[in-house]
Image (tube, rainbow, N blue to C red; front, top):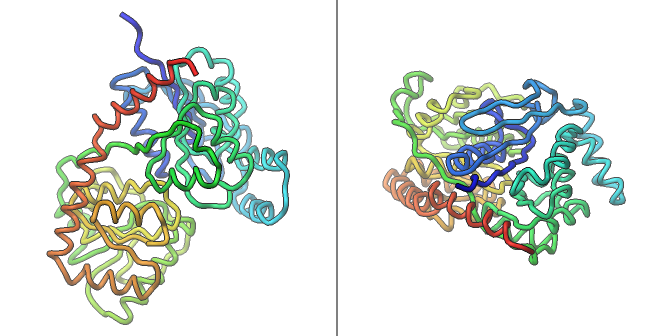
Length: 395
């Protein structure tokens, strides 16, 4: 009997404690592929993307059927200084050599990880690299480009226009985009239409017996509430959501809350109808989704939003920022939610959803059907295996 395909998945951070959409998607893909293939994850010892400080011990372990190889980051970074340096860098003219130096500094730069990729190139049938932006992908993929799959998780940001990343997106044997909007964006900016590609996201696991009343009791929640899940940061445009919601309440006094799940890196207002409950367990998250009146996503930059797919699977409608092409397109394709682009539109759409339970139910059901049609694991895994099989054929 021939051995199963041996796959290496390279990602900047990995583990149940890691709070990030791309990293969560990478872990889900790895664990589900491991039911069919021999999967090795190559990653760093970092948990926090702002510092890349080594937290996990280096070495090889197993986690949920995945062979996990952790390598130490060469040096942690100062987030505040790095942000200022990046701002100056983007505003100045720079060469390709300057961009390479910036990638090394932005990290996570892990020499042992890159060395392992180089010397194990023949040990794996394929390498899957998650997230174009980080050094693990940008410097690792060129070492094994002839058998590499890139999952860029890209959105419209200044970095994507840099020459180093435009070149990177022309190197792999195959690219997997999470949405059609991401595919259109990357191909337009990088001119890589000649690279074979697929639009293929991930499966969404059905919730395990969610109990909305358990969430309401545990967190003392009554009545309607909007739910946000993810990093509570400027990068996710949460300050705008907080501003919009407070202004909405001032002009439309009504019961209800905005509940924020996730790690916060910004100061939060002291307001009786705004609550941050921190990083929660998977069960608490599923209970919260099942209890929510609607899920709100203010982010301007997404390649795919897992939280809105999970909301739809729970038959909960969403309200997203229409300035994000990906989430706006997902709402249109699914008919599972509404979107806004200005404060006035936020008021109009939120008011409409809160006052119309029948509309919310209809949008939630349509969103659920969309997820069940496009985001089930058997479909996703079959397509991944087909792509991997194609990589085995000669160029």
